[in-house]
Image 1 (cartoon, rainbow, N blue to C red):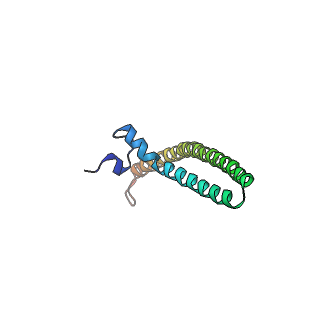
Image 2: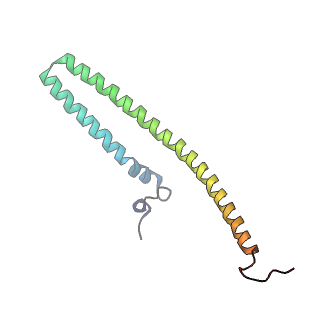
Length: 119
């Protein structure tokens, strides 16, 4: 039998393990970004000097902050849009079901085609 982690169900099983598995891609992306910044600082420091190294260090911090801000903003926006879409789809689905049931009732109340109508 498959475990909850393999199925992708984060609501079952130990919370710590599920949270760690969920966060691994973010941790990996942050590690790659930090390695990129380190290599960038090494090259700039060896080729251009102290001032350029300071500029790259300050710029990488600013870039990391901006990326974090927009990542959080996009996640928050995604939640709000998902909730709004769920409300709209629920309302539309209920309207559809009401119309469908009304049409079914009309179909049941109709007499068969060609049948004699009572006078």
